[in-house]
Image (cartoon, rainbow, N blue to C red; front, top):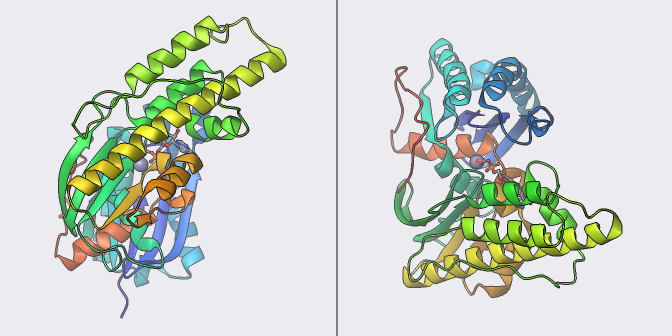
Length: 342
Ligand code: KG4
Ligand code: ZN
């Protein structure tokens, strides 16, 4: 019989539920986004997020079951993100998962959100542990984290480097705000950068020999340049503004992609990784994906954009491997807003 896991993710602004079989086969992946609600405020409002999760949770669970063509009684385990993330948002998913696990009398599996981003790659046709195989160099780049890890085996991570200030996604979001673009910033920056001529250039923070990142200097450099050019707070408008916004968005994206790709490849070389696995919202970035494929001698595994941003499928996939190791939780599991891996 196949192990069927229901995965629940509510760490930030997506109420996401999915059904995954054997940790690899995606049966459904439903994402109820609150983006429109938060975009009005230019960022995530934690209390709004929690309340929206409460409203969306039950219908999203039913939609995920419906799409998978399974009943609640056919669920073998319930997986849920218990950190890192917004405490109030995590609590909604965790309590729903506990209620389901209790009433269905199946195991509850608490999953680290960042580890979930890695396991999105196990939903692809080829499992990264069979090809290219361990050890794998993992780059997680999301709205709250930018981590480089060496994954020696399932559930075994060694943290090599992380951001010392802003996460890559956070930097994209702040840059978009300075350029007068929408929220979340990554997709907007990517869109307007297409077709830019490369007339602008922004600095890169290499952080010496470490595997750490820093994006706050880049953010400040962008802000200064936008002020000098009259883009922020104004007064430039019209086609001239549009061209300069395009050029700065391009320069910003080039800087982030160049630093992340260069440092990921260096860490992979230094630690003898057999391949690179990437995950997290920023990995949806087309330029970053293009650049790493261009430069890497090692196989690079990256999920399609819909599995890079937050989803329940990655949580269910990760949980299936935890289940195999007997790593389950009791109903006293708590949220861990500041959880890390490695
Ligand atoms: O993983 P994720 O969905 O949520 C967190 O766990 O934080 O990541 C969200 C982040 C946002 O900062 C967003 O701007 C960024 O991912 N992002 C992108 C792209 N799509 C989403 N950044 C760059 N390029 C994109 N295409
Ligand atoms: Zn995430």
